[in-house]
Length: 196
Image (cartoon, rainbow, N blue to C red):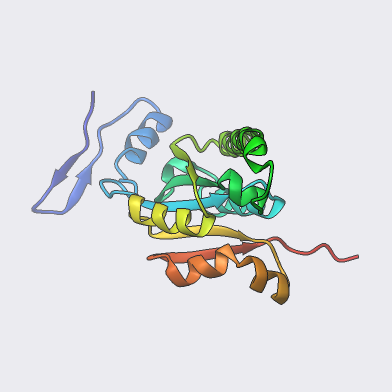
């Protein structure tokens, strides 16, 4: 194999003679190191649930940070789904609650599996294969902030549900909580409204 040599005294690269221009171009292309070569990738955590806004945030992230060539991205992707507890999902505790809990838990597990399956399909469609997927039980606000700590993430991405002020005050906003409590930059991705 012909190698490129470097003359330190003159500062000139000497390219070997090749039989075709294509071979020479291929050899010179291999000389340019990737800008992130040797660097450890930063971690980007994306919080997802079963909402349209959540999947839009993941799609937006894949498009803007992992396309057109995911291997050149400066980020390692971690996708986290927070599975609420059955009692939280039921929202009340009364007679017969204990009978309902196993069914609600089973349904929450099915939802989590469906959410992760869709996330995997989206990542595969964009050729993003180096992804960590996690389902963690608990309140999404705490789960996402803990995932940031666990993975030493530099960015957390969440979708915006676009709640009004009253609904946000009653339910609490995951994105608002994370923006104030996560120990990293938080990107809140809003799905554009369709104008009629």
